Length: 150
Image (tube, rainbow, N blue to C red; front, side, top):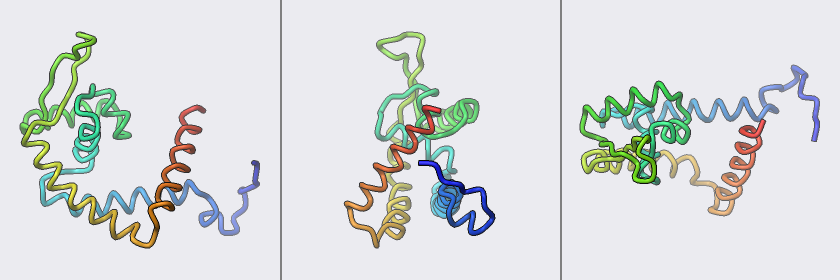
């Protein structure tokens, strides 16, 4: 599929990457306002949610899942350790890797903040069916894979 999108006529409307960045910025702004009351910023939120699904992850894995730079993620994890939100251990299968996991305090805070994320999700996707959301996720996942393969 090759389309010529190099035209100023409604370029932004017809360029999916424009919409990806707009949606990401809008979501980040809304969520950041809502979770600020919990003392959580977006980098911490992303790390917390990475650790929610995968209980133990290395800092590199958290960086990958949270779409953040490794040095940013390292600093976030260090701050979260200082605040008692995460702890670390040596990976049982590879003693060279340090893994991070949420503490009980971190999990409690993640749960509280997730209520805000769920409210944003519900308001945003209320007019879509479960099938439409699944189709969207499938399409976005395919596009992500193609971009990572380039």
